[in-house]
Length: 388
Ligand SMILES: Cc1ncc(COP(=O)(O)O)c(C=O)c1O
Image 1: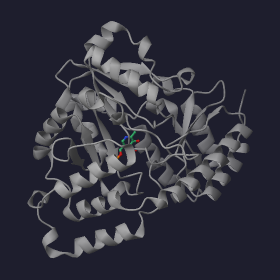
Image 2: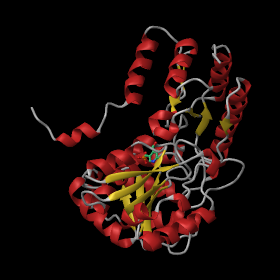
Image 3: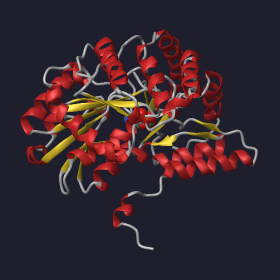
Image 4: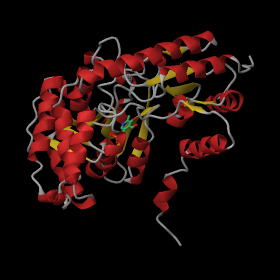
């Protein structure tokens, strides 16, 4: 059978292969600590689980979602953006609920790119951006994120001819995998860049509610002119510890929202109604649990920072996200070091090369295990042999 050639763009995912290997190791009786998982180990707040259960029990809540008005959820999203970021959104024209931000993250390329169009994609970055651009026939121009620049794109170093050809620009802060956050100055400069070169900004803000030391990350849409040049993806997944729900949103520029609404009227039939109600409640609920949850992430972060520094690694303590980015020891590729650590200590960390060429030389740890397990992982790493 001959399927489309474009399928060759999607390579077998190394992380998926590794998860199979980890399962096999567990079956063989090895006590593997998986520090790769980007899914919180905490549960959604109990009141939200109750809403989901109650709504699912209603016999008339199981029709196609288009049967129910989606305005209440859109209003809840607009309300969240107003309270959290002081951003005003028109629920009718500037808000689109998504089946997780991945939904919009993939389809946005269909909305923005014609074949051959250029997309600026950070390196390292979340691998789905590259795949989305290429599957739609777009061309990727990589924008390096370096430690010297705080893992932010250096907008001044983007060659003018590339900026002129670019149609869209992927931005993701708080950042996966580096844990970096964007400053207000960066966003202001980005908006000027987007206006100058007529580039559409797509900001992926999935991690805004996982932050440390009380420093709440901002949204790209907070800055003047943002809505004219772009949109933001947001998600309930990490905020409410509910990655499995598949609830997210796209907000901002109304032409893009209108295009994406058309696309999604064909690609899905909307969000399961009980989930719409639970999402709405989540967005309107008290966020007190977030402080305590983030405190737990912070405690884990501090254990890992100390542990990795103890074995001589250079660490970039995150200001937000539950990821920690560190350099592998000199003389190793990221993959070699992570595989060796797995073999010798049963601790799995993700090689930075999974996230791009400039991720080489780094590793990513997810702070998604209880603090005792994180501490145990650090103890085990102390014992591995690091050749110099
Ligand atoms: C940077 C980034 N964007 C988007 C997503 C997707 O999140 P969602 O669960 O909302 O689809 C993830 C998931 O890990 C992510 O790391």
